[in-house]
Image (cartoon, helix red, strand yellow):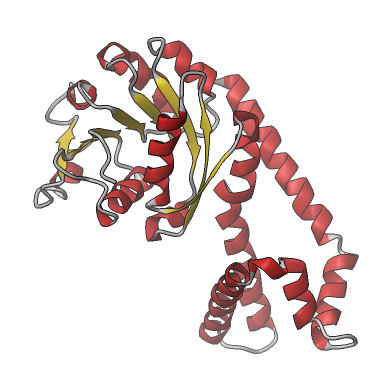
Length: 278
């Protein structure tokens, strides 16, 4: 179903991905999405897109205020360090009951609600970068005033760029540690596989092709056969006394599972520190 009038403040990579997903899924009907950008050059890229009304702060200093007036959904797509100033700027222009969706990592719902009028329906979202190709994973959490309708609107927006889970806000740092930062872990492992492939005699191109396709294929297979579980799929590749078993044994001896667990906990601790500093 088409969404009500939406304003997206900020046109960074994540906000841009969400906008493209909304357009691709036909979520924009009679009212164009109002988008604010820092530069006129960024706004100009939407000149030929009638479903987007892009305004630059460079040419219109009050673009954010103009965008949120009358908007029923406002997506905050700016960096966390810019969020406080943005909220102070737009707070009085938000209409009652606005669904206010924040993409800012480390900024709690309580912090956002304290900066806007009572009754604004705040939803906190933690998306990840594969949203740029429609394969994102997003966790969302409802604020104190956010009702089922607000959550449904948020789910509709983020479903346009991948999968969505709804969690209590206390779980958002865990979402960030698993899926928000998760792409970096995957890239790290791909990078390591490529380096190892070169070390054992493959060309850089061949090692890269094999590593990338292996991750793509294994991820897709795991998704299609989710009922089996990752552990069972791993066992099916790991023949007793075979070559794969030797590799897995090295991982186990190196306590890779423990390393991953410690990395996730470190990520969550840092997220909590950032929230306390906000």
